[in-house]
Image (cartoon, rainbow, N blue to C red; front, side, top):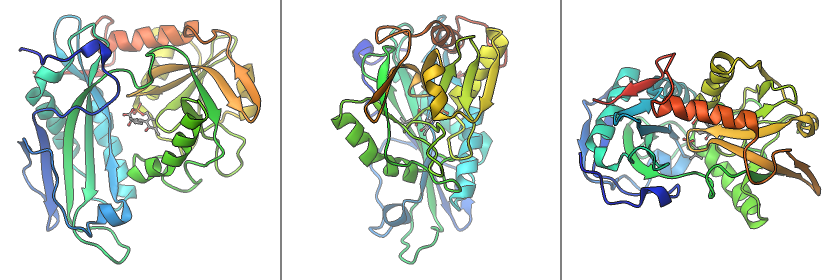
Length: 341
Ligand code: PLP
Ligand code: COI
């Protein structure tokens, strides 16, 4: 397979149009058979539910070229399951999980020339999504929906790749206690746009959101969960009903326990204890594990011991093991990696 002539090693996290995308329409209570198409444009009513009331949900996963040249995707079954959970919360029909995996595979296969070669640091980011498409003016869910999957080659989410970033404790809230923080709905990201623009203007890479109810507990960032490492090498991640159940975080907790033999804890994490951790990282499909070097909290700074040039030692081991499994360098003990044939 000839690859596209792209400067893979210098890709940022941006959109590049690829050749084919998958579309399936839901009308009269049923999904059609779905197909790959070339047209990247979508035509819909000016009054489409997604445009008026933001009825849209999405997923994100990646395809990789392994060390021995295979194309693989990572745990697509969990993305299928999470999209179903998002659909239920948003009064949308579930796209069958086996069809979700098939659609992802079709899109990767059809855009194989855009799957970055092994060793470039780039990956193919896959974006499944679903939205309410028919006109709706009174506030209610749509009746008709479209499910789509496109793919785009990407580099690191944060400029500088694996270098530590600086984040700030946000003055804005991301998700309400009984709201939609635990699903992947576009509205959660719309909420975060002003906060991220504000953080960037002030020179920070991301926001740390605290729980909206008490503002004492760590939740997540705009696009990733937190992992902390204690001074005695325990891996800790916040537990909350208003954060997204990150597939990367769940995988890393298993890596920590089962591959690295570390103790792991999923529990409420109070902001007051963050200063006592030895390492901090952001984890997600886009972020992989991005080390946090510094947290700014209203005039005070928390600086982690590894500094601003390199990851802490446990974060590095987690990163190496997870990416090793994804790229076929380390045994895939739990069958997480699915080959696209
Ligand atoms: N939290 C938020 C708000 C996200 O948008 C993402 C990205 O998907 C994550 C966490 C990480 O989730 P995952 O590891 O499943 O990509
Ligand atoms: C992902 O990691 O897949 C996400 O959806 C995060 C997003 C902020 C790009």
